[in-house]
Every structure is written in structure tokens, then in C-alpha cells.
Image (tube, rainbow, N blue to C red):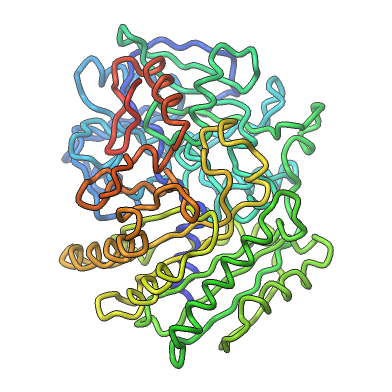
Amino acid sequence: MNEGVRRRGLLTGAGAVVAAGVVGTRSSGAAVPKEPMFGPVTIRPGDARYDGLLRGNNFRFVGRPDEIRVAGSTDQVVRAVSEAVRAGRRVAARSGGHCFENFTADRAVRSLLDLSPMNAVGYDARRRAFAVQPGATLGHVYRTLFTGWGVTIPAGGCPEVGAGGHFAGGGYGPLSRRYGSVVDHLYGVEVVVVDRDGTARAVVATREADDPNRDLWWAHTGGGGGNFGVVTRYWLRSPKAAGDEPSRLLPAAPREMLECLVTWSWDGMTERAFTGLLRAFGAWHERNSAPGSPNAGLYAILMPAHRSAGSFSMVTQIDAGIPHADRLVTDFVSEITAGTKPTLNARRIMPWLHATTWPGTGEPGDVISRRYKIKAGYLRRSFTDTQLAAVHHHLTDSAGGPNAGMLLVGYGGQVRAVPPGATAVAQRDVVMKAVYETVWTDESEDAANLAWVRGLYRDVYADTGGVPVPGEVSDGSYINYPDADLADPAWNTSGVPWHTLYYKDNYPRLQRIKARWDPLGVFSHALAIEPG
């Protein structure tokens, strides 16, 4: 159960990558809320602080930059990347450090920009929107919005993820089926970009139709971090919100959440019962994921762990204030568990903040075992029988360990109400996200764990070249769960490029925006958008 909760915390909203870049000096744009006085701080090898600030959340990746620049303001970010440009040093920016790949820990990165002190959350009366800096963790964002105004955003369930990368990649979480993706509430961004002459400036871009910088805003509604510039601020306001009363400009936060935990033992679990359970979970989401569905407020994660874990679980959450919330959960659980015998079926009601900010969730293992590999895919419908057989085979083989498994995450609902071109999140007609993972401790275990999760993923998508090619069942993957294997012909034999899997028809527009706002190509990583 504890491991399942850790997996849920990691993956229900982990933002994969923060905006990264290399820039010059000159700041422009509208006024923003006053920033706290911190930094800048420059830390180099040999400093007692260096090793402590070097690693992100995934210990598989450790860079060795010439310097770690800790910034506390937009001006400090401009100055830091300006110096890096002049010196010819590649820069990567990090907020929460939860990147699943090595985008900020690449050995080619010579200047690591730490944005964690930029963590302010507040209301900007001039823009009638809530301002969030990239270093603010989701837990801090939730607590501040709730405490000050009783509002929230439909972002992720991991309280330690930084807003910087999570927002830019199109974050989602327990309230997304009800309120959409977090970027559906994104009003504007402040981004440090580089002009063709190598000069840096801070640009404000909003969703206003007459904003000349609107395309830069659009690129940050699911285009992923590290592609266009360094995000130094987000502004959030729901699209149809009117007036200047802050408590009416974002969704009201639930007062309490009802959570139900169901657990099954692998003992006596037949292949037929197991695949039937996964099939039922998918079928329910096929029928109950339209915008405005009476069940759109219900969010569930099925977490099939490897047989060696002994058991696996499903967590269901719903705003306890929704009419008949308890009955909705009961009906859902009854349908999913039909034909199986759970060992636990318990529920509880807890305050909203307990469910979203409680410490101890969001870390993939303890302080030592933070090596992991995550792969993902969107689902437009349930897995096929062949795919379910592949899942069962790998979850019951002798190669996987107790910290290996997968998740089926409920999606759809209000997310599907937004056209695929309205934001950079192209996968709107989907009902679930599938996540494949393994977590381990020592570097000596790397090869075995990578082989296991890659084998599972390849076999699930064997009919489409080892990757979730958009079609009747699959719909590509989620950029906040980046997977460099999708760009590797050894693992992607589909002939469909990685950028189509992540961005589909939105990629050409993202390329044009890249060419305009990063003409020198200074923002780069393993899955970076190429200028078009």
C-alpha cells in the first residue's frame, strides 16, 4: 500500500521538465508583483553546497556543471543566462527537479540555473489573475490559493513538483476531469527569451486575442519546458471568469475529499480475473468521460504492481461536496471489482489540503532509492486483449521487482471540451493515461530495471512499432512524462517520429514559435522542439 501511494504521488501530476535556456540581458514587459530579495548565488565545484544542490529527483542523472546559479528574481535570471551566453556555456533551468529524463542534468549543461527561491504565489490585481513563480511547489500553490481565496487549480497530486515544468507541459490531476487541464486556466506567462542578436529580455505573453506575443503563451499551454525560454512567472485565471473578485476567478477548492482505497492480493488472482479488472476500468472510462458527465468529478488510479509486490491497489477520489458523491464511488467500485475479491475496500473523508499537501507523497522511493524510469501513453479506449495479455505477462514474470508496475489514470471529462488546437495539448479525445514504471536503488541494477520496463512497453505496443502511435486505441504520449526512447530507432520502430507522439498536428506550429522566439537555438535537450 505504501509503495502504491508513493507511485500515485509521483505520477498523478509530476511535471517532467522545467523551462531551460541560455539568454543575454535586457528586460521588458508589463509590471509584475514585487519579488523577494534573494541572491543571486553562484556555487562552483569545491563549494560545500555544490553536491547538495546538484541532483534532481531522479538520481540516475547527475550532471557536473561549471556553476549552479541560484536566482531569486527575473532580473537575476536574465543576468545569469546573459553571462552564460557570452561565455558560450549551455544553460538548463530547474524548478522542482522532477524531470524524468536528463534534461537538466545533461553533462553538456555547464550552467545549472536553480529557480527554487522564486516561489511566490499571490494575486495580481492589475491582470486580475493569480501569479505563480516557477519554483513554487504544487503543495505551496494549493495551500496559498486555498488559504487566501478558497480557490484551486486542476494540477497534479504530487505536492513537491515545481510549477515551472508542470504547468508548461499541460499538467493534470485529481480535479482535471471536472475542470480540465491546468493550462486551460493559464492566462499568461513571463518568459526570458533570446533575440537573434543574443540579447535577453523578459517577455509577457497572454491569451488575449490582440496580444502580439500570444503565440508564446500558446506554446506554454502544453509545449513542454526547456523549448522557448526560461519561464519566470505564470498567471492563472479561468477563461470565462468575470469581474475582479479573486475568489471567483479560479475554481472553488473542495472543502473535503472522499477517498476510497481498494486492494487486491496476487494470491489466487488468475489472468482472466486480472485482465477483466483492467478491462472494466477502461470500459467505465469509455462511458463516463464526456464533458459534463455526472461522473466527471470522480478520479481514479488503478495501480497494478508486479506480482512480487504481493498486492496492488486502486485509489478513487471525489469532492465530498458533490451530490451523491458516496453513491457515485460505490457504483464505480462495484463495477470495477465485479468478478474479483478485494482484500480491502475502505474509504475516508479528509480536508482538501490534507489530500493535496500531506507530506511524504510524491517521492519515488526513499532518500536512497530514487533511480527510476517512466514511460507513458494516452488511451482513447480500453487496451486490446493482446495488450492486456502483454501487461499480465510482464507483471507476473521473474524479471520485475516489487517496485515495478504500471498505472491506469482516469482522464477525459472537461479535458475533452477543449479543441486540440486551442492549446498545445493535442491529446484531447482521450479517457485514460497509462504509465509504466520501475524504481530501484543501486546503479548496478540499472540494466535489469531498464530492460524490464522497456520490454513491457515494447510488447504492449508491439502492433504499432513499440510506441503508442495515435489511432483507435492509443493517442501518443505526455510530454511531462518525457521518454528519450521514443526518439531512439532501437525502441521506436513505428516510423512515426517522437514529436508526432507528443504533439501530433500541433508540432508545426510549435516549430514556427520556436523559430521566432529562440532563433539562435539556445534552448535544447534530448526531446527539444526543432525550429521550423
